[in-house]
Amino acid sequence: MPSRPATPSTAAARRGSTPTGEGKKTKKKTKKPKSRRARSISPNLAKKRLSMDSKESSRGQETVQVVCRFRPESQQEIDKGGSNVLELSDESDKDFTIELGEGGDHKSQAFTFDKVFKPFSTQEEVYDHVGSPIVRSVMNGYNAAVLAYGQTGSGKTHTMLGPGYDGNALRPGESGDAGILPRILNELFDAIRASESAKFEYVVRASFIEIYRELVKDLLNPGIVKERESLKIRTDEARGIHLPQATEVPINSVDDAMNTLKIGSDHRRTAETGSNARSSRSHSIFLVTVMKHNTETKATSVSQLYCVDLAGSEKVAKCQLERKANQSEAKYQEEVQLRLKEGQKINQSLLALGAVIFALAEKRGKKKTHVPYRNSKLTRLLQNCIGGNARTSMIVCCSPSSFNAMETLSTLRFGNRASLIKNTPKVNQYFSVKQLKAMLKAATQENRRLKEKLYKAHSELKVMQEIQLFEAAVDGERR
Image (cartoon, rainbow, N blue to C red; front, side, top):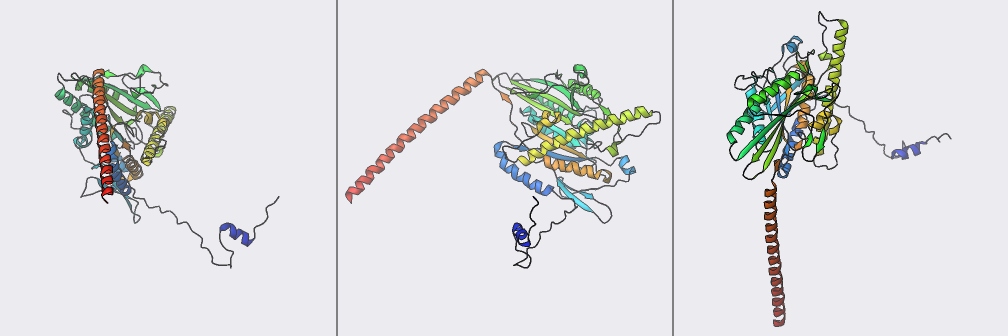
């Protein structure tokens, strides 16, 4: 049946107001149009982080350290008409502003990080703030991680490895441009040599993998799985998340470490794009496992170091290749399609990483918040690093040019969100049977002592209560 037309009074009743002309008129709430002005979210995030740090420090939780590194403007950006949009603070090395818009439509957004490195900062300056504390954590038995994030061509691989992949050129003593990873390996073995004695024994092993188009590949032994197959990811209580098929080689010196790094880097997938002459087409993870054994107490600690160089997020319009003079149309189109597929998978995994970071940042004590680690191979392998048992530092690499201003803004917001993540690092120590028996005996004795103390306190309390009752009775008789 057709519905009955609503009368003015019934329609007004449904709206919860009186009909027109009967009583007071209700004002309609008009929605204010959203402003297009860029929001400055960093001050609020910084306040949240400070409050969380004070609350969570007692629980053994630490927030992820996030630093920002700006590279100098490239010649390509200058040729495209880009200009500097970075305004650094004179009073602090943690604050800066990004200027957006043109002409009279200037908009700015302020950001705050744990540290900001200027465009001409040296590799050593970055390492001293980020890498050196990581080595100390690993030597003390903690898991640790260093991640480099940013758009393609922003300087991530330069920051992590240096300006080349040659093993000798990567040595800190021979090249001032050596990146964080070679410097970490150098300081790590210096620390091992300094502390190695009859009391402590060390075993160091390394593996090097990449995630290419959502397939996990072994960079030290590329032929271990077929072209379209992936290394299997497994989880168990003893080892946590691990790759049982991945090649793990013993590292006995800095030379061994540099050779391993060079072999893996040579096998990593790189290609030319419109934004970068040597663009990384995969995410790489260099994993170092350090086992420290105490020969006297028989205790063993096992720490893992994750050095992660993420592939850069890409815009198709900016990364489009130009056809070379001697290249056929078919070959050109094939290469273009491959770059598009690679870029799609890179962006897909970075979106999954962003979703995990968003969920962890919003968690803030909520017990049932779902964190989508399993949406990507990348997030599953980095589960310990983001929101898990590790001390993590993230380097967000950015361009200071207006040509890449929106990509820089996106990267900075990503870093701001990551700075809210809370990890729970702990010393990964394993005790011998003899130690566990001794600890059990000590705990049993302490338990017996506390029980005796409690029994004695109960007895004394009972006597005091009886005395109080007797004194009350005597006072009553006297009255």
